[in-house]
Length: 363
Image 1 (cartoon, helix red, strand yellow):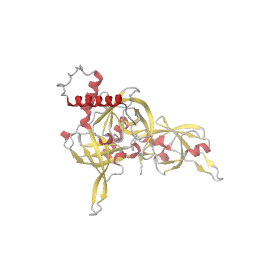
Image 2 (cartoon, rainbow, N blue to C red):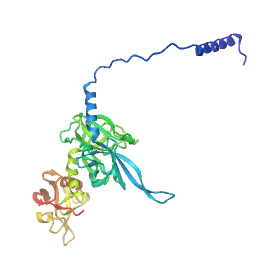
Image 3 (cartoon, rainbow, N blue to C red):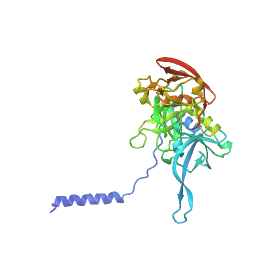
Image 4 (spheres, rainbow, N blue to C red):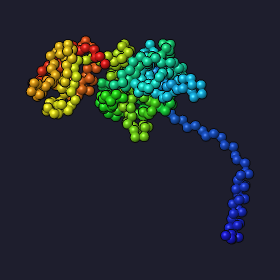
């Protein structure tokens, strides 16, 4: 391609201009003056206050697995995942999700001041995805989280989540209560009822961390997200604190969730449909000498001619309706072995109420 004289002159002029710019010294450029911003607004001040007040209560949990060294064949502990937890009391009890430590051989807890302690497993209740650990930290280092209540939560109120998403410790996210009384599935496939839904960002690593109200009180334990990508999609769930406050003391006391029992076996829901029974738990078997037998509850049986002899269908316990075995277990778990409860039953078309004294479950 042949360049015209004019084009050659233009290229030469541009080249000279660039050379001149590169060679010329710049004038002194002082830093820009800072624009005054004024005081922080009330919402920002509250965000800061909640974080400063509660972050010392939030801990990082490292789940450890066992791995054999390829060359020496020695078995050593290696990190296999991280999660969040919080200080429950001055005795060193730490609350987190069961699934955070589910497959761990051991765990370490790191406090907000970055001191780390070996954790001892106290007790777990997988049906509610709750676990309690204990560390030997001095009481002066332990800041128990303030406890609130979940019974009076309202959709729209502000909430805060503090946790360790993706291993980034002491992260604060904010949002609102998006919905109440949600149902999520535990690792045992039992239904966790009454879950709190929030749009505060909850990501992998936040599990087991506290969900707080605007007063900095614990109102839930962050446990799950709904997300096709695995990252926050604005739909997170927390176990309500009233449930946590009922279960944790029992795990600390007994090392496990001691279930109260009626001493019976419930039928699958197919039996209700096949026999056109009302919604509830049809009784298939009653333990001899157990609470149900002593209260007068009767199972469905087969007669001498092969037909079905009517038994009882449990429709409510202490006035709370139960439609499935899961419903019944949920109601019973709020009680203790030795407590009495009123069992409402359907028997041959009539409703009756019987009183049963609960025993300790054998499982």
